[in-house]
Length: 423
Image (cartoon, rainbow, N blue to C red):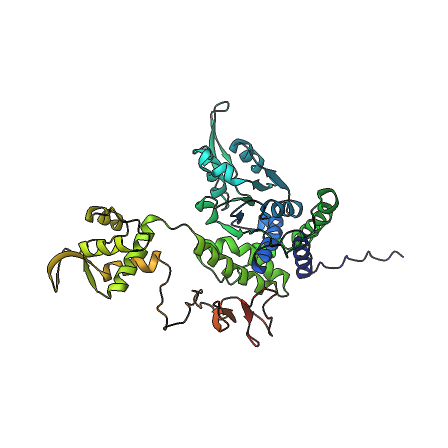
């Protein structure tokens, strides 16, 4: 009588992610624990692409050379699903590579040479591909003269990029952005030897494929409670779904990373001139403590701001830029000095709320509090965060569940921890 074959033991997803995390940490030092967690989850997400509605981009950016960005991309290449790495490829070649039943994970090194000023617009097709490929069912259309038919070319694929300086803002808006920095003298890493070390990292990737291959249906129907909204939620949902599947402390890690890295991206995002104008107008109205200002006085105060870009402003230029936000002069307004054309604070209120970062006044001498997502779910847990001082600030974040204290999750400085007894 033959005995039935034993089933292989189920893979512990949390332990597997922990091992990948430890492996990456040997060879490169990331700027924060949250960045390392995000990279681990992004790599894992490449093995579950059929389950995702959106394919998050990973942008690894550095201010200068020798910050570890290319080394991190090497590790991503070793661990991710079906990597296709390139420094300089034609958009047509990339389109054809993606348009397969098993699209590769597209990896682009030195994106600053592709999207920088020297490219002079030649990279717009590639940027369009990366933007469209963030969402499922956004094919490129090409006309085939031989068959005289319009051809649909798939664009949906995971993509990671490394370079110096900011990537195009339309790509970063769809990405998990990791800001690398040069290692300090006290920080040591193990040298990366591709022939020696890559097989070990690739073996972890094979385990990810085995683990996630049997859970695609679960991931496809997952509806995780998200701590971020809008496009950020589209980008982070696959990573958080994976973390919830893995269990352990990864659900907390993933949501902490989403909040932290999304906030860092907003803090470092290049602000358009129009949004800068809105923010500066808010500064002027706040300083004047006025419900209305004459146009001439508003322009004078804008010109007087530190590093003001409005030195050549005229009433016409001001009106043209504000009109995009449906803000218009209120006409003649009665001021103590007499009637004059001007703008009211109320006319700015809606645009300030929609486009400017929150401006919450603080008590004298207290640091400002970082903005956090609003409480929207009864399933929320609670965590505490640090605002840069030694004073914790309690905040509620959707989706955190714990039966006990998790602590600082290994961060160098206290950032986030789950309060004991949170649901």
